Amino acid sequence: MQKPFDLSKFRTSVTKSISGISAGFHDPKDWISTGNFALNYLISGDFNKGIPLGKVSVFAGESGSGKSFLCSGSLVHQAQKMGCQVVLFDSENALDEDWLKALDVDTSPEKLLRISVSMIDDVAKTLNDFLKDYKSNYGDLEYEEMPKLVFVIDSLGMLLTPTDVAQFEKGDLKGDLGRKPKALTALIRNTVNQLAPFPIALVATNHTYASQDMFDPDDKISGGQGFIYASSIVVALQKLKLKEDADGNKVTDVKGIRAKCKVMKSRYSKPFETVQLKIPYDTGLEPISGLVDIFETKEIFTKVGNKLLYVSPVTGEEHKYFRKQWNDAEKLQMVMDEWGTNPNRDYHPLEDIDDEFEEETLDGQSTTIE
Image (cartoon, rainbow, N blue to C red; front, top):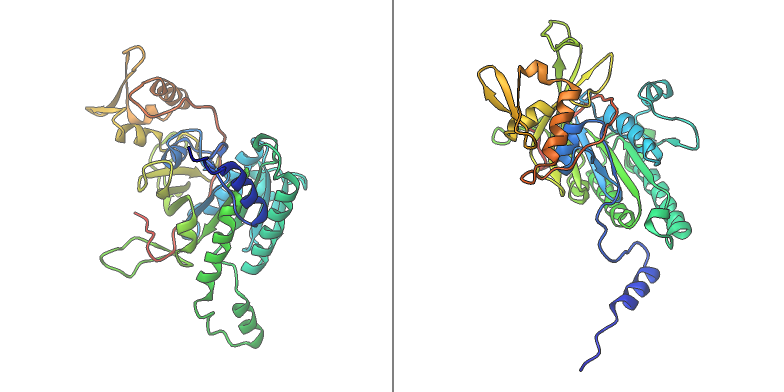
């Protein structure tokens, strides 16, 4: 009988001799909550799981749609809660310490490193140097023993190429001749495989622009499609006005932001589903916003007259309330917990999560928003 080839020996040889290569499967073990149950569910299929470590995620939107609030604020806060350190690349020079602290982000040097950058090359070199050092120091440890880290790039759209800088210095701004999409593609492609074996996430924001295609009117993500193809998760955000008071009553004044989030790409859940998140100016992102709509869409809630009916899969008890009455954390937690015990539902019990958010949309060539 022929002796089988020793794949385990070959795996060890390959991973140690070739830089930037890893072997085996790297299914996510750790997830960072977005701070909102509904958005978590649309991204991962689990109300507690938002962004996976070991992957690249992109949030894109127009100015003021909430992407910086979500990625540099809420996600960073949630990451720190689970013991992650954060490196924040700020290309917009817009992330003030007071603003981050107001979102409960720990800005102490041992928890957060903010780096002001302007060029794609600088981000690439920093990431490359860090990952080489990380692999050298922690690559032989068990996954559970490795330090957890999150890189946030806010934003890709503001990063420059060497051509941009050279033209600015000459006072002759003709554009970079399409070099930026190629540079962004190279940045993500060189990073994505290096992240895979480690508890490290890369989260980036990007801008969008209005589509000129009458047959495909959704907004487009700028910067080309290279980083979109390499990303595990792509979320598009649109900016809407929140004209409701704290009790959910309609008002004429704008009280905050309604961020319409559409999951354009996810390897962990059904894509192209949408949820609207409420972000009041006074209190920040509402963790339960969007849940009632999801429960109604999934037919967990049934419309009976002008009320919504929920029948417990555990006790068979009926709960019937007006929509406004369902927007209550205790009631919704009951539904989430009971729904999680229903074997016909692909869902897991939840834990509490915190709050916060801001706004923006999607740019690119083929990725679109609703």
